[in-house]
Length: 194
Image (cartoon, rainbow, N blue to C red; front, side, top):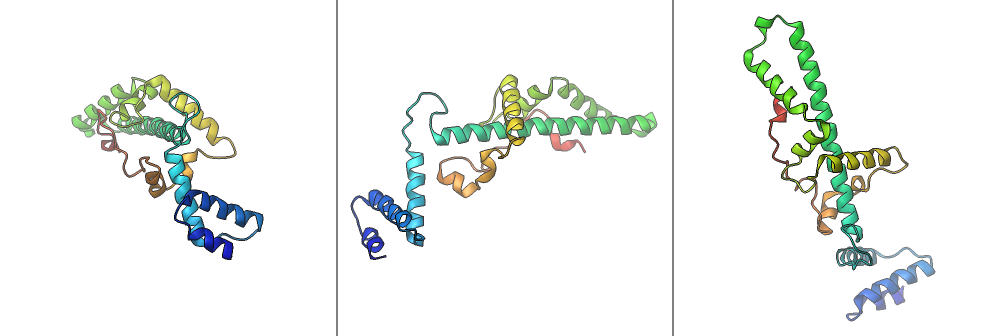
């Protein structure tokens, strides 16, 4: 433990001292002290934020890959939302048919027609419209690819990575948390359909 305390007191080469202290704990099979765990976590976050990619492309760094996976999850969620809206429209239409024509207000009929017209664009085009104004905005074909990727990941042994991280941690990495994401500027008021 004296070794760890001497490493804790170093003011120069602090990053190397943290790595050496962690190595000391591993080799001696001791539990690292709280100060060391905090310092190592801070160091790892800093290293991730300043990672120098060795390959080219938009997903060359760890954080960039996570950001893209989170966008895929947002796109998947937009597709699920459109499918839920489609189901609600079908239920609404069935309920309208069961009622006498005079019992259904004209504004209600117009609203349902507006939603049906919007949904006729196709699921992935509607999902793209829901994502307008958000970082996850993409074309219908990209949304389709993201949807398939997440569905394949969900059927596997581990869920998408974004599900494992909380907003404060994502913010430390320089990513948007779920509370910071904009809601998008869609054409229709989706909450209008009940």
